[in-house]
Image 1 (cartoon, rainbow, N blue to C red):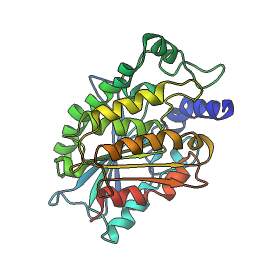
Image 2 (cartoon, one colour):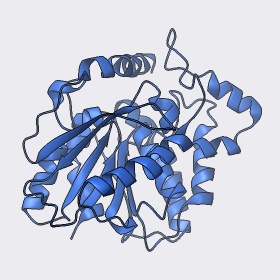
Image 3 (cartoon, rainbow, N blue to C red):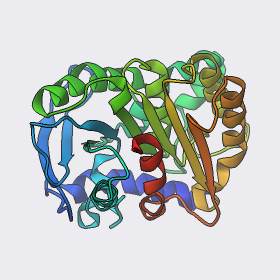
Image 4 (cartoon, rainbow, N blue to C red):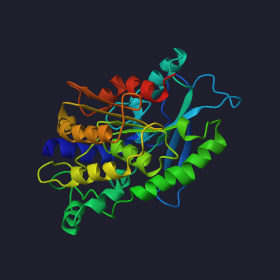
Length: 308
């Protein structure tokens, strides 16, 4: 576990440097970068917008907001030389007329990724002692604290909803309603996607949470975080019928930790009335915690959220 934690620490230390300012190459569609997009709530960051082949302002498009924008399109610009293959998968599904036509908004992460992606209101289900311990958590011996400076996911979501979405809707030809607005991420990005649809159910009509990092930190022993996250989900989960929720997990590396917690989340969804029309959870035997793994199964959440 210490080795995995150190690898993750190094990945986010060098993400910004390796990604630099180079624009990813895409195999389909067109990529437009909005550099250092300013926010009153969080640090400025790049926003990469992918437009499908044939994009025209005369039509309207659904919008998929994706976290960790550096990792979505081109492995040559990512820290680990892996990517989600978003342009390939979406381009193919649209060509086959299996999903709605949509654009993708890739939101770059920052060195404050953990602080921005950890669901802030989950702290309400922890004691002061537990919160103090959480604030001292790190990825492994010799690494910085994960939450140095505090948890700021509420501000991150304010940035998405009150600053970024209005800009995207003004700049591009989009359907602006919740039924055409989706959010997706993996690991901590899975957590913040779940948090987003719970906090702003009137904005996001669907969320895809791949390899959701229920532990929140990098240990499960005596860890109260999963219980707090699940308590939050139980209280704030929007009612079924108008929202789509996708969860999944693998069985290798960090994903090996997730099944017990995902099973509890699934039980909450069942109790709240979610069924196969508005929620699925998938287990992928042998899949690890990596962009390669998420790329291989990306078509599944895309078909679920955007399928015709």
